[in-house]
Length: 200
Length: 312
Image (cartoon, rainbow over all chains, first blue to last red; front, side):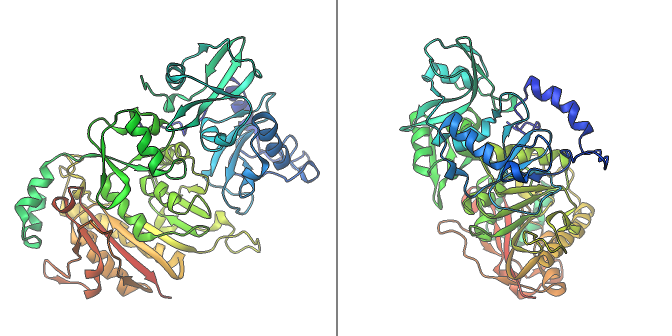
């Protein structure tokens, strides 16, 4: 069961951005500050406080979860948000000094700095229980295929395209399984390799 | 199994001990209550027809009758974590509270760390450290699967753990300079894992034990230093050797500002007191307050666990 990729949801975009990471934080003093992939930096509260260009703000992040999935802003009241790696955003349950050079800080929840922000499997499993929008509820067979990492035709979905929360009913309630990418009548599973499971 | 014969003198029922060491361990999971209640996780297992039995001493620690935990929906959702039954003890001894600052000195792959996070209600700051970068990715993977958000992961030698990343000696109001509690689940000769790894004793030697004792003492010393006065440090191993257990505590009592505190094992879980004499050595009588767990008492792996309070 153990896997060593740290549960990263690898996407095509990630592979491209990974190249940019290598340049980040090279630290030419004349240039504006860049994201440093070796440490965690707390996200600015609002755009007015932004120092590192392109860095998402706490306000944007909280709004994004609400607009896209209907997750109430107060869900995040106890959490701080951080960036490490280009566009990789993390949620931490408390607050610590910033920047902080550690290996991990809370839960990686989102990939930003790309046209369509992509939530992580672990984020929607933990916080997607509060979602009211863009939740695709799968039947038993569909859920099993999704957990296995398989793509499937799902013409009945008439909600938004893009990243959706795939869920199913278990033990008396609807529970998020992971993140699907819905395009052209097809639901693609983005469950990372280390999390896929044959539950049939 | 030659090494285990050393312990015949410690046990009246040595044959039962040896017989238990020969039996394979049951597959056990712990419910991660950050993601599901014990009741809901058990309902989900029932619905899938996964047979289990709750342990006598903890309603959220379940012995599975057959398959491993990895192939069920509740596991996929991060409601369950595969964890050897006896290894649930040290986090209970540590008894961490919400919003505290807690250190797990040797955290990977994270069974105990994630249990600590659960006990903290996923609040406060839990620093999970390990010196092995490869094992750290397993820790991160497990913590993320369980939806934990209060864990900061560090990669340091625990013996010289530095608060520098946390703003030590700065004016930053968010700096961390001491822990409220610390768990030292020390690297050890692993004699108690014989039921899980039948070859656990193949590389056993007294020389190896002597080498590892220095590391254990060093990590425990740093944990006591790094914890505030009045704070708690739990020391545990998965081995029987008094050299790695009572002798390490005895050394800490002598060298550091700490006292061993009485801690009752959960009701229904049977333990033996620490030993005060071994191979001609005598230890501080307080080491009797530590808990030895022999495999035949509760049908688990072997273990050792002690609770200390930092006094200075």
